[in-house]
Amino acid sequence: MSQFEEISSALSFGGKQLTLAHGSKATGTTMRLSVFLPPAAKDGRVPVVYYLSGLTCTEENFTVKAGAQRMASELGLIVVAPDTSPRGEGVPDSPDYDLGQGAGFYVDAVQAPWSTHFKMYSYVTQELPGLIEEQFPVRRGAAGIFGHSMGGHGALTIAMRHPDIFKSVSALSPIVAPSAVPWGRKAFTAYLGADEAAWKEHDACYLARERGFPGQILVDQGTADPFLEEQLQTQRFIDTLKENRQSAKVRMQPGYDHSYFFIATFIDDHLRHHARMLNG
Amino acid sequence: MSQFEEISSALSFGGKQLTLAHGSKATGTTMRLSVFLPPAAKDGRVPVVYYLSGLTCTEENFTVKAGAQRMASELGLIVVAPDTSPRGEGVPDSPDYDLGQGAGFYVDAVQAPWSTHFKMYSYVTQELPGLIEEQFPVRRGAAGIFGHSMGGHGALTIAMRHPDIFKSVSALSPIVAPSAVPWGRKAFTAYLGADEAAWKEHDACYLARERGFPGQILVDQGTADPFLEEQLQTQRFIDTLKENRQSAKVRMQPGYDHSYFFIATFIDDHLRHHARMLNG
Image 1 (cartoon, chains in turn red, green):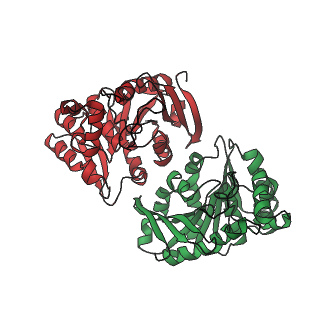
Image 2: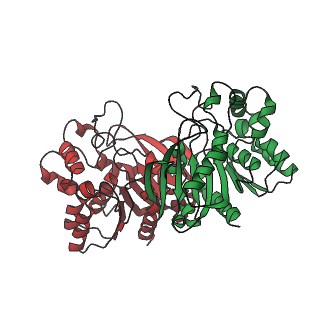
């Protein structure tokens, strides 16, 4: 692994759970990520699924809390979870949890002071898949993407813009209408500027209307999620999908909240969705 | 829940994952614990399994990292994970990770300054089961105990001394010979005093020789565990079990380390072991 420094490695469900670091060209910082290699990756090329985390998370939260390794091992999926932003000294930050480090929003910032390092869109769509395919036994043309909350926004928008790279997509508690909700409006104003025209290509509802996705979209959303009403507004996405006859399964899960307890409960379904699409 | 204050509650695999706090008579402090209630606990009494964590852990590590809820939900087990020591201002501590707060070693300290609050043995064997049976739909006579590392030591020693309370026992990477290894000798000297005669009743190898356990003991231990040689010395337990014809399954798991990635990999087997013993 010439490009990656191995921070840690542990056997997990017969596979290997790695934490890696590398110097990123996109962000100009050291980026961390976790990579799970299923047992099947020893014997041949397998599909890869990218998981994008939510606000405040690093590469670690999903890796230790979601319980994805069991099913990824069984299905033979490589699972890659990058950090949610550039970090470190010299990288701009904000005192707020929803802006700056830990809150990259999967866009390429064009506004100062963010524009130097906050290039998570380029990182996730170009640099990261390139490196992963170079270093691990990924089957060509078999990459999927999913994520949670801010990462659900990242997964949906990136998949709809790059169906050539990501052949399957799903999301848990995603931000679906960032241009219309406080989290999204704050981040987009800071990173992309006040001209809302520049926001559209990072808005899942806009993209579902204008582009759609060639495969079925799977979304799970808890009805007891404290962010549902103000920040997530899943109904906007449901309506848009329906209007545009997008193949999708959006499941409102009664009583579930926004936590990793929710994610862990439905992670198997999401991994199975990706395996089905990528192996089909 | 008159005795417990609810810190948090989340739906998880159709069950309820609670974090609770209460004023403990045994420790004289506020103790935290996590309780998972499977869906079956809505309809009737079910078995309970107590999980004791290792050094430095709180009630949270197991709860968010082990992935126990899926199988506990399926098997219909209540799972209770207490904190590993009293904590807070006024509670003695040590700068070392292996003594003081986070390192109660499941004994009742008799040496100053620990003897005021460090009563984890009484807490786990008496106060906690009493409260849990009072507040939750536990089936009488259907309690098991397991744990990891220091908590594996706690589970094995407590089960062998109280087979009337705990009808099933298992351990992951347990300390099995605390009287003979640095972690145990340090903690027992501080908590129980220099007279090693007082240590015996907290030593799993001694208890396996002198008492044994009426049911089968399940132990999993990773061969790549960095603590295996100096602190765990599983072979001592294997030899003792053999000499005393104790029914046991001790599995050396090739390549696994001491982490929650190891625990998560084998947690289903442990929960199945307890369900089998408690429902049989």
